[in-house]
Length: 109
Image (cartoon, rainbow, N blue to C red; front, top):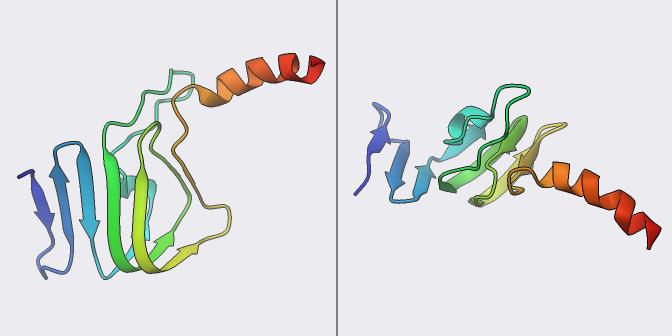
């Protein structure tokens, strides 16, 4: 069993089990702070994520850009809402850089 994080009311459970991070809440405003991955500082290489994330909730409100490179973000909910300009990116680390380098070659074909 991993480390359990539970609020005083018992209504929120956040638990790391091996390579999984589980969040169970009735309602969550999901931000990057809830994802166990910290993006690299500007100009530094982007590391890969370390944990797959599983979110179980009645309602999930995604707020802002969330990243977890190379790992999954699984949301099981009755309602999933995205604020304007919100996104979830699980692309492998460095994928966008590779895409930018490969696209000129593809356009020549």
